Amino acid sequence: MATHGKNINIFLMDGTANGRIKCTLANWTGIAYRIPRVDLDLCKERNDLKQSGIYFLFGVSDETSEQVIYIGQAGARKNGEGILYRLKEHRKNPDKDYWSEAVVFTTSNNSFGPTEISYLENRFCTMATDAHRYIVKNSNEPTQGNVTEEKESELEEFIEYVKIIMGVLGHKVFEPLIATESSIDDGSKKDSASSANIVFYIKKRGANARAVQTADGFIILSGSIISRDLVPSCPDSALNAREKYKGIIDEHMTLLKNVPFKTPSGAACFVLGRSSNGNIEWTTEQGVTFGKFESTKA
Image (cartoon, rainbow, N blue to C red; front, side):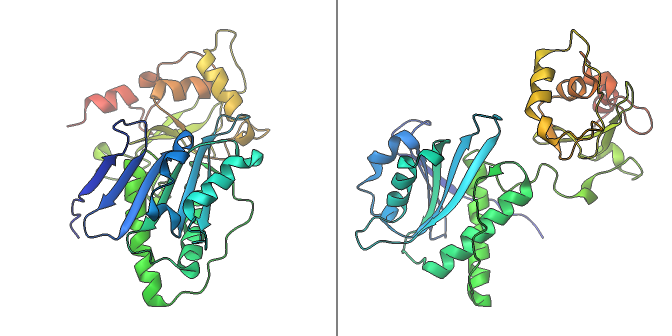
């Protein structure tokens, strides 16, 4: 089935890309807002933020520097303060001082009831957890609630639009680093020269690592073994990455999760514990270097 384009309207509410942003899509009743934490008080006159909806709090962990997210729901209150009221409550909560930006979703016709927002909160938490891009800060899994099959179909369509807008706003919270394991090509496929997810290997210095190139960069795959030895001249970037990801490296130096890097060289330095040229160190199963592989692409 052909993929159709989408017309997204992005309004810079404060005239700058760093301020508040409002997003709408053609033929969609949903409304999205990106609100920096410091700008919450500028939203007090917006009636659609006094409705029911779903919100996402984005931030960075002080301890690990990992991206974190909290996903919540807000029902309309008698005092007229729905989503905005909840965001202000979170701003006062010392346990939620990590977030610097909120993204909220509501509707132009205020059509979300308790059942709808419970369903959406549950689905978004599950999707974000499964994608493994952010640390999900929700302490309890939200209940899904009971919806009819007709309503479920309607809400799933809403979710697809949310995924699009999240990506436009720079948050790939629902997109796995690698779409599926079946998309990884070990080089046995006849069309492997054109495969975006062909596997590259490093097998030296005690390492046995696998990686694929994606739109996000170079991803070292879960189950890879990295070198235990770090040379004295090991780049700071590799040392910092070892420290950042130490929680997902077991006693056998095996990665328990996929690890993203911007470049093949950054990934190679991390794996080998020394300065490395990723264009040379990473090779296909047939021994073709990453640099050579790239140069032969049509």
